[in-house]
Image (cartoon, rainbow, N blue to C red):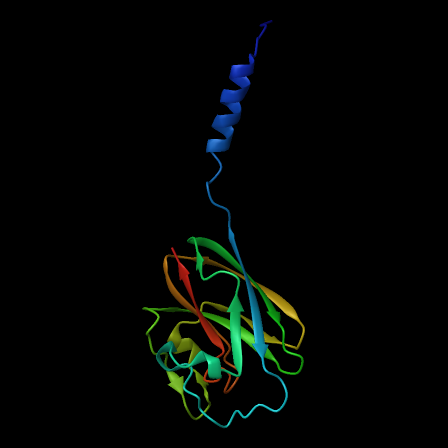
Amino acid sequence: MFKVNITKSCLVALALAAASSVPAFADAVVKVSLWDKGGMMDMSKNMGMGMGMKGNMKMAIMGIDVDQKNVPAGKVTFDVNNASKETIHEMIVTPVANADAVLPYNANENRVEEDTAGDLGEVSELEPGKSGTLSIDMKPGTYLLYCNVPGHFMAGMWTVLTVQ
């Protein structure tokens, strides 16, 4: 039988070795709020808020707010809440070349062509006040989060997320 003496310095060394085997980053969680100004919104006007992801966002009648615009590469979980009191919204994640990219848009349907744009996943059709989650393994790049209910994208319902 062997007798082992473990000193305090040995315990510290073991603890440091164990800690160094754990990744230095944790999975990212992005809190997302889908919102609108409520009431009778005039969706007949194409406000152009989504073309090239530009526009006067002060005029937006709908939007997507995130608690962080930059996250590390790896697993990203989106905690999505539809803050609207009356309107169904969704959140779709699509990679884009940069923040000035123009998405393929079908004017007849008043929505983005999701398959052509490269839909990576979504939290679809959330009733007012409801929540959902989506987890995606994301590589470094620029991504667009948007609602593709007809008219919502052009009403300003999008935001850019950078993965580093």
